[in-house]
Length: 137
Image (cartoon, rainbow, N blue to C red):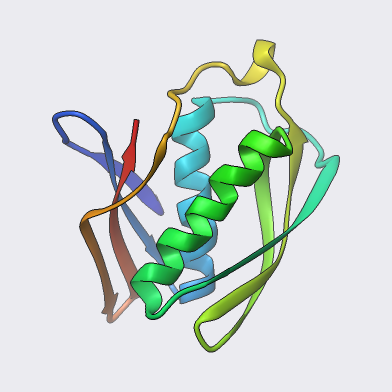
């Protein structure tokens, strides 16, 4: 499994793994979507929006990417399902595709207020990347 919830007293802490950095961003987006919307049936994608983020280092880039994705879920009513992103240095850009939020289908999760730097850990491993991150709820 590319992500798993870890024990945390007040927020949602996740460990996310992926073979490369761009896949890690996509898996992180999927992890956040699972917190926001719970378990929901996947449907054909009907929305595509642009996404862009940058950071001083890879950790900041992850936080900024997820923060931008969180913004898109709130403003565009996007339930993200897939990502087409590229990287240039400390900047990522591309598109996120998904479906429009429907309260009858996507209300099984918890509101995420933000992405925390507290407890953030990003490591390159022999298998790729491992991220530990906290979603503020």
